[in-house]
Image (cartoon, rainbow, N blue to C red; front, top):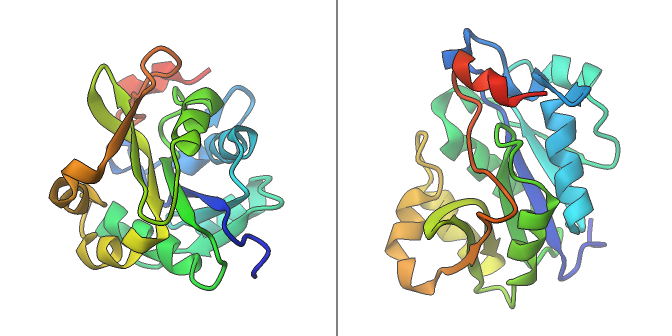
Length: 199
């Protein structure tokens, strides 16, 4: 897999089991007539990611069976129950050997973040040392772009549900924030109450 030389791969973390949703995997929730995982993958493609890798975990077989993810690389994370950190590691590992210059990481449970915000973050990429985060009224959020020079450091520090938080804190001065509050809403679908955001 070398056809992504120098490009940016979208890395969609979609492995969560929806513990606070009564065990309903977020990837299989419906939004605007399609599964949330399909919606999120389409956002990354529309925004301009050269390729999309989707990390699956909870109910992975059902997601593979029901979701239309043609053209995406599906990555299984057998350790998904350990938290987002394991999915981030699995996703970054899947980019090894692809020649991708950067990974743009997005979360399956943030349907309020559309192609406009993702495209802004992509446009801020410069080289393999890039660290770019969307910001909402100055507060750092997703999506996050990691140049390839950061992948090993992120993988070694990504544990539990913290994902890349520790790495980003240690490299705060290198982060470029891209304001997206005018085009996106960064809410999460975590609880039954949050389901009102889905259409």
